[in-house]
Picture: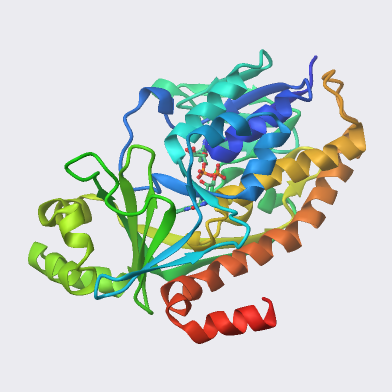
Length: 391
Ligand code: FAD
């Protein structure tokens, strides 16, 4: 019998992990609760685009999928700070011209799933929601289409099932897991800026745009079709005070006067009420594995607030680090040879130990960066200290 890996969750991290696992020659089955994104219309509201940095690019490079992705990103070489009077100031990220990159979530997910499916040993099942897991026997139960029950047996279970991970909950029942989940008092809503009437970008496309407001902020990332996705992050109380169309419009006219004509007053109000308001949570836990049987990665292991733009980046890095450790224990082997349970348990425990300090630091940095983006970017003394003290 070939060694079978069941990946729960076919989001960004699960899809990349499937490619990594496929290259080991193991039998890979990905179960995703949603439908196939390639046959679904995109819905606004949940981070349409993401900032992709070196971490994710390196992880994709290792399995040969970065080149294609880099063709359709929009590089952002710095922040563009928008002031109330409409003036803007560029703050480059690097003196060497390094960039972060705006990438479309849906396109990236679809591409990675398609790349995974190119491997004959990968099968992806959509509309399959994990409902039960016995991590000792490796027996999983999924609710398939039409509420049909699907039984699966796996040698190794990889939880890439996001912030509310059921795989993590099951590991938690069996190991002495430290676990911390923190919601912040701020939420977010996404808005949309179309190209100008002559089909051009309405703002500089090679920047991440920020409207810092000290206690809250709005940002905008460019999309290849010359639109921008704007995300307003602010305290829930502020959202609750914006009840009527008039209140929303007054708020934007007062706080973001340069944005209103670019988005259009009617469109702005419509999308503000139509789009969901998302909550922001971070998770710290350890360990990330149960013996040789289960490991969880991505948001399941370390969901973080989005202010450092590192959630997906770190999730991709999880795949790279995990497989470097597997390579160390089992060699770079694509023969599909089953690992010994003891050695696999050692490798997964090593992953848990090595990964924890790095990802928890990034979870903290992500929270810190909210203060930097909404407030410190407006304070020139901060930048002088940063330069002089070299941090
Ligand atoms: P998810 O994307 O949540 O995918 C998990 C998958 O598992 C989903 O497809 C889900 O349907 C499936 N699933 C869940 N439960 C089950 C189950 N029981 N059975 C089967 N399938 C299941 N990151 C960045 O790097 N850069 C950014 O700029 C950035 N911006 C962000 C902006 C916002 C507003 C937000 C909210 C997040 C942002 N992130 C960013 C974070 C990034 O979105 C996440 O870190 C990333 O999506 C994590 O990927 P994942 O695959 O681990 O989890």
